[in-house]
Length: 90
Image (cartoon, rainbow, N blue to C red; front, side, top):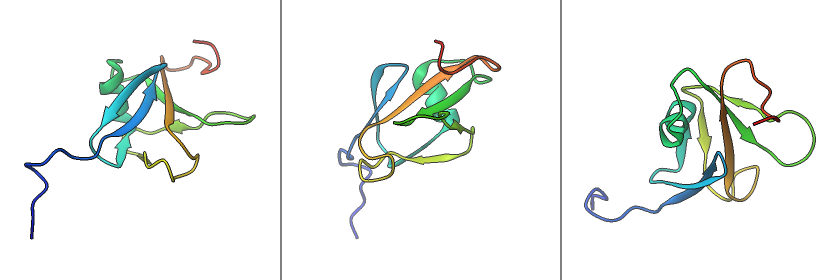
């Protein structure tokens, strides 16, 4: 059985605070998104989803599937914000 640790892994693309980022695993959680963004650990992460309605909050340990085939399809987009602020204004 081959190990993948020595080979370059597939990179998953995501957008965090309007900046393109790359992640080596298919799943990422809210705490990891905050680290990628350089945001404080007590901030909130929202996944930007197409259409009307609110963008769902991503909890610190909540996994998000970055696969382009996972819903919503395509590159996943996230916004980090201070707690108790409106995600639409940032």
